[in-house]
Structures are given as C-alpha cells and as structure tokens.
Length: 114
Image (cartoon, rainbow, N blue to C red):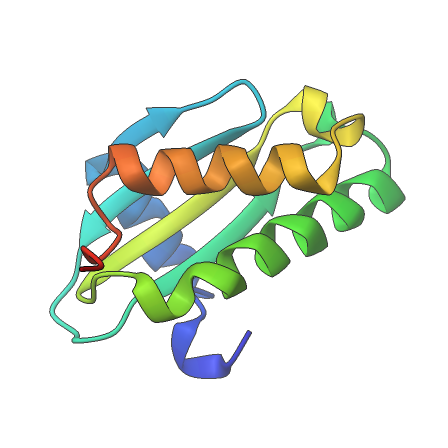
C-alpha cells in the first residue's frame, strides 16, 4: 500500500479507535473516523489472539491485499482501521475479501457505481 494511504502514527490509531464508528464481522472489525484530508488512510492490526507472529503477519497481508483492491472505489476523507479477529487465521482469502467488502458497504464507504 502506498505511503499516502497508510495510517501509521500511534496517536492517529488511538484517535480513530476512541472516536470512530465500528462495524463488526466475525473475521474483521472496521473502525471509521473522518479526517481533514481528501484521501483515505488505512491502518491494519492483528492482536495476539489471532495467533503467533507468522499468523498475525499473514492476516495483515491478506487484509491489506483485500483493501488495496477496493482503494479506487473508496470515499475519501476517512481514516480506517482493520482489526483481525481470531477466526481469520483459518479463513480463505475469498472469505476475508467478502467480509471486508461487506463492512465497507455497511459503513457507506464505497462510491456508487452507475
């Protein structure tokens, strides 16, 4: 993911976690907070409940890949955090992709395609 689309600072993560609106799925949690920029910034996290370091990194790579495919159709001016949940370790890529796409639709972050 390109640098301008990354959410990296701890303070930014905490701001989004505290004041953002969350949308839950059994595999992934999406937290959304508006920002003053015209672009979307995305942060990805996986806690120890997901598994060991290899499993956490695999989960984060898969989530980044899924969200990267959705970047052109995302509404700007938002900060997003994707949090992996424990069942993501056994999920297929297609299941993760559908979960993230469903969360983005529920949050109203996808541009309407005509």
